[in-house]
Length: 348
Image 1: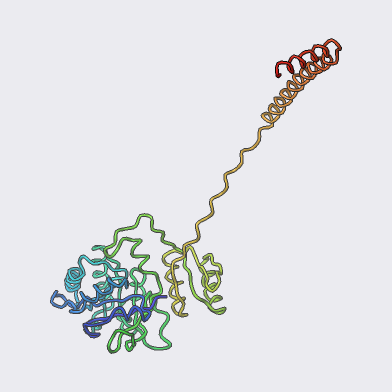
Image 2: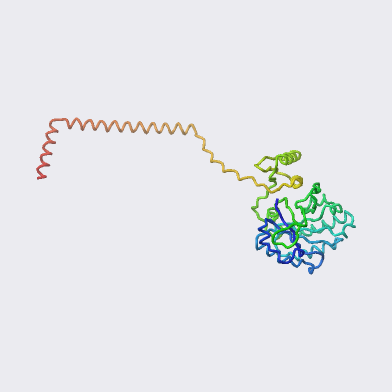
């Protein structure tokens, strides 16, 4: 689980982002603007983006939508794309759907409008998401949208509705964070958006060919009760799972099963991240099997070599014996004596 904030001009133009980062904020969702005209771009967006990039704070974007028609949403997304052109975002690009005028639309019309906007973002290479709050979610096909896009839901109640799937939860609008004067919205992200977005090559990033993206999830830290709850859900979905210290590992899972696992984990206040199993150890090179025929041939060759050596040793011993016999002959001894005397005389 990652802790983040979302900011706009209402937090002022002088946010001290170094203090924000030091306060333990992991990411920020920046308002890029609202409406259909580039003049409605948020005046603090460029500075907030530059400061977050300078300090290594991952960022995403939201755009407040006024549209009520398909043409309207297309124009707003066009303006949004102009506002964020040339930038990179580690978190999704959200359409902020909460305008009161949209509540008068039919559920089907509002849902279609949102899908049209998200499709336009995806076609432009962005990771699209939808922001709204719990009561407003009833005006759209929230469950259907959640199957297609990542959802960011606001609900400030202690016992909020956990049946609505969300990958990010805005839990207060009155947060206090060092570096920001006044109140700020605070959020929790339950999935590893930077890893997912980079791996997919979205939001201005080049696709990383060798990026490892796991369909297995690491959930926790978990208590004993939460562990049993998550294990029971995994078993009901026929998913493998195992304990890993303070965590439970679930998967591999399909995209649909992932959403169910994430939704349950977030309802329990648990963190969820991608799990990559450790690289397997390199197997030892197998030793070649011995050929019995080759072994017998090698033994026979060794025996022959030893026999040859024995024969040569016998001949050497025979010659040494002859030398010994010659030296023991009296005539030979006399010759040796004379040679010794001659040598002594020469030495004088």
